[in-house]
Length: 205
Ligand SMILES: [Cu+2]
Image (cartoon, rainbow, N blue to C red):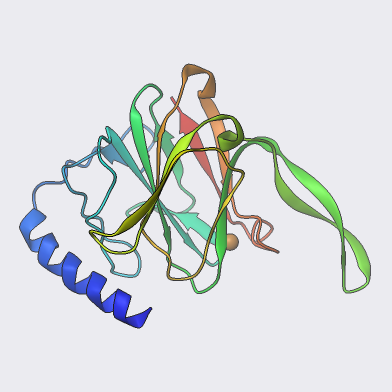
C-alpha cells in the first residue's frame, strides 16, 4: 500500500505540471461540485493527492470525497449539494480520504430504520434508503490502481460501494435518465456514520 501511494504521488506530480491549464472548472448554479470533464482531470483533494486517470467519454465530472464522518467536495465549504445533468455521461469520482472504511449509497429518502441490539439494548438505526439509485440504474464502475491500471465492471447494478481507507480513484460512469431527475441523498451506513452526519445531497437536473 505504501509503495502504491508513493507511485501515485510521483506520477500525478509529473502529470500535474503537464496538465495545468487543461481543467475547465464550471460552477453550476447552487455552488455544485460538478465540472465539465477535462481531457485529464487534475483535482486537489484534502490529502493533497491528485488524480489523472478517469474513464473515457465523460461529459461532466463530480467529485465526492469521504472522511470522518462526512462527505465533502474539493473547494466546497460544508456539506456539498452536488448537481449533475440528466442525459449526459457523468463521472462520479469517489475518494476515501479518511482513516476507516466508508460506504456510499445513493437513494431517495426516507432513510430506512432497522432494529439492532447494541450493548444489550435494542435500538433503531439508519440502514439505507427506501429506493437505492443503482438498484435500477446501470453504472460502469472503475477501480483505478494507478494512472494506467484499472478494473472495470460494466453495466453494474448494486446497492452500495464499500471503500477501505486509502482507496481512491473509484469512478461511476452513468447516464441519468429523465425519471432519475430530482433530489437524492448520498449516505454512509457504516455503523454510526450516518448518525454522525455522513450524508450529502445529489440533485439530478
Ligand atoms: Cu462512513
